[in-house]
Length: 384
Ligand SMILES: [Zn+2]
Image 1 (cartoon, rainbow, N blue to C red):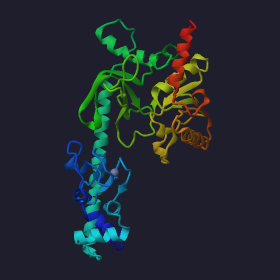
Image 2: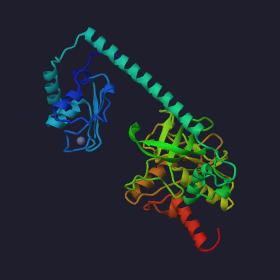
Image 3: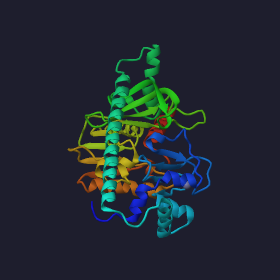
Image 4: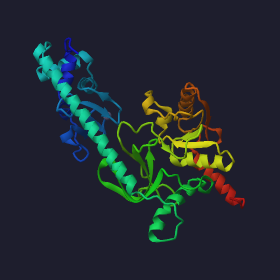
């Protein structure tokens, strides 16, 4: 680095954003916050609110940054002060420097000292990230090993009643299991899995579909809490959110592989939608396809531009069928994102087709919904 340290950098490094927000009237939510880690949640002084959507990260006690999930403001202690007191950059900086007793000049020695501290904090953060990744991976392996594979026919025993939830759930989501030789080996059922909100209290316990993430190597698991009829819900009707756990930093862009590889691959966001579409294709005699679930829309379309976080087919693939999903609220945006994904893959020399249920971007449907409708139509007309 070297060079002179900007006064603004010194303010950002030395002033505690938490203390400034405290003085501005933030009420900290100590249940949600983890003070020992410098992770703070509170009410936002920038917009009137009773909930704690204002997030400050300040592990070293100074040098914090904030993000408000209510008003979407965020940044450094200078950004906060500008916003809160309606000052411009120079005025906000002067105010903070005066309060903290920071003068304009800074000695070489002090600068080296700060640089050392910063490097130390960075190393510590990297070690912490590494540790978290390893812990996540260990837990994922544990969940995977404890989850059950089920290949034998069901006998109606108490255990079978639980494990049969998975095939019943998948059928309810429009997957034609008979056409594809049963449940893929990368999907298992955990008969009783806890769902914790933000790593805190257990808010639901029940059967979950556990999906292996990664090609050839288990990097993590994806969990969907289910019943025989559909997704499991909270008592107020909200669906239990899907969760990922594993080697943090290596999961994004990695798929759940649903079949053996082939040169033609169908990819969708969700496991159910991809399996529903894939099993429909196989039922219709299109047996050349293989299938992968990208596990998030962002992994297919971005906004990340970083190749490592985007779903990319394995070597040997020549053709990709993307299963798009429309949006009744933002149809143009949904279309633009998926067309961007198709362009990205075409630029890699692949033949790419993009499809969306009923050819419409303004419907909140995925292929699991469509396949289910087709199956229901089949039942109504008396054939399967
Ligand atoms: Zn706010």
